[in-house]
Structures are given as structure tokens and as C-alpha cells.
Length: 369
Ligand code: SF4
Image (tube, protein in one colour):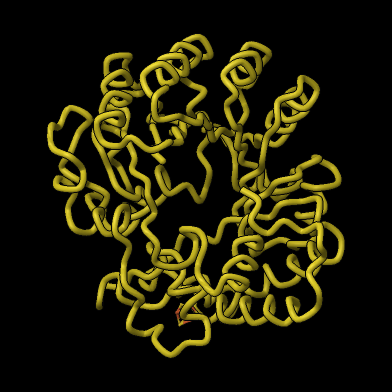
């Protein structure tokens, strides 16, 4: 997957945003909107780098800031240039600018739509507000309603909020909003930063949040609602190998192109050090990424990391397998550490193991994409 950061600014100022609220200032020196020339260079760079089917994720900032007309043009160009290898288009948006023109473009280009929504208004608006502090829930919900009415499918991305009841949030997203595919994201913390959350919420806040959610989902929603983080755990346990980038050491297989054509690795690593996502490459660089990427990003994207030494002998070494790479970071040993959420993950996997001891319903398609 290649993430195209087609807009480097956002119409929201979310409190937890890893781009704008956690010390990264690299966005300030980039063009607010990717130029047509840079977009063309990006899709041609992708074609030079790989011949396998690829997903292009339009991201930002807020990607709808580029405007529906330009987005439509870019989708058609990507489909033309990458036709031989096959391309899937996706967008991750806050939904605020999704109007009928956008819906038409999204439908025509068969773009998968991910929308960020953290729960009911009091949960969502406490974290996802605009630059004047106004909440965004109503506008996001209106966009979802409009897309549903016009037959455009969407999924929800929701950041875990320890201040609020997980079951209440989940029921709101499923029963009130109508979501049938949700991903709950673990907070982006590492060993240098997680202490503040432990002080505030206790030793296992992620497990305390996700275990009741798992039980609710298992009882009521298992067949009809996809919850990606929980699906991933079940599949990891059934296969005895980690399945997605959220767990394990498989190569993540994605890179990021910033709005100025700079190629970066995992952008969340900028929370550790602003230059940590740098690769030294741009979409105009002639060398193949297999040669040009620095070791950190070559391993993260193409080769995979070894199991952290601290995970050897763990019951979950094959399933959790160290958790997600950015969560492993500490000044000591860099990424060769168990996840900062290790205790949580161990409890969670144990809980899911116990539930899997009961029969998994036949209709449950654990490998669903
Ligand atoms: S639970 Fe902890 S020790 Fe075990 S694999 Fe996961 S991060 Fe490593």
C-alpha cells in the first residue's frame, strides 16, 4: 500500500493527532495540496517500483481539501497508469466536506471510504474539534447518512478513548450510526510516553477497554459486524501467526508519499523523532526502494523485523509477536522491545483464547478482508 498525503493541512485540530498535536512540524514546510505534477510523478514512481496489485490510500491532513474535481482526475490517472498491475483506491477522511459531488466521484471511481468517528457526540467532540474548538460529530454523521442514502459503503476508524465506556461507544457506532466495519485503534504510545497513561488509567487500560468490547461483540455482533483489531487477533490465534501490521513482524508493505513528493516510512515514527520517518527518497529518485530505503524502513516495509528479544518464550510470541512496531520503541534497544502495551496484549490474547475454546460460529469468516 502507498499512502498519498495529498493535503498536508487539516480542517480539524484533533487532540490526539500524531501529525499536528505530537510535536511533528514537518508538515509546515510542505505544500498544503499536492500538485498535479507531484501526483503524476508519484503514480509513475509506484509503477517503477512494483508490478504487484497495489492499494492507493488518499490521506492527509484531510484529503478532501483537494476538491472533488481534482480527486476525480487523480483517480482516473491512477487507474490508467497502474492498470496493468491493478490498483484499489481508498480514502481516509473526517467526512466534513463530503457532499453530493464527492459521493458521485467516490462511487464512480469505486473508492473505499474510511471515516474517523470516535463514538457519540460527547466522546467524539471532546477529541475531534475544528480550529475554533467546535465539535465535528454532526457533520461527520451527516456525511455518513448521505453516503448510505446514495449507496456508498464506508467503514469507521475509531481511536480508543479510555475516558468512555467501550460498550456504549460500540453500540452507538453499530446501532445508531449503522457501522458494519469498525477498527478501534490502540493509542500511539511507546515506552517513553506510555507512563502518563498508566498513571492516569492503571496498568492495563487497553485490555480493560477492549475485553468488555470483545465480549459484547462476541455475544451480539460477531457475524454481521467486522471489528478489525478483534478479527486480527482471532485469525492470529487460529493460524498461530500474526496477520496484520497491528501485531507481529511481517513486513508492513507500505510507504508514504508526502505532498511535496518526499517518500517516508511509517509516519507515526515522527512522534519519536521528527526525522525518523525520513527515507532520503522522493518520487523522482531513480533508485529502486529495495536499494534506496534506509535500514529501518527497508526492514519495516519490505523485510520485517525479528521478534523482540524480550518476547522470546512468551505464550503469544507467534500471535502478538511484539505488537505493532512503533509501540516497541524505547531509548534503550530502540525497537527491540516488547510492545509498550505488552501486559494489555497478553491479557487480551488470553481472553480471546479462552473464548475460542467455545465453538466459533460457522458463518464467522475470520479471514474476511
Ligand atoms: S504479549 Fe508482550 S512479550 Fe508477549 S509477544 Fe506480545 S509484546 Fe511480546
